[in-house]
Image (spheres, rainbow, N blue to C red):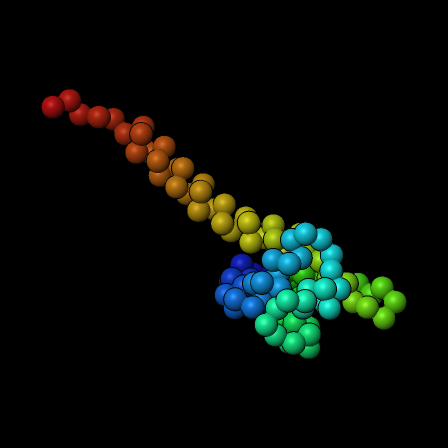
Length: 103
């Protein structure tokens, strides 16, 4: 998964709400859909998009599908965000280490 597709997928507020519900652990579709302003089939479609982007995974438990966060997908996104910090720290270090002229 490229970070760009993850950002695009998470830009949708309903999809982001579905994604955030998995923060507390694996959930069945009906549990994820409870209280959301969309139907259970719509939640299933959002989960498919999240799965295709590599952000969630599913497993079967009898006739139910259980969804959970895919940590590898999250790490790719996290690495991209952290690259900004390393660039910022390097720029800060270079600025601090510049020789100062006496005036």
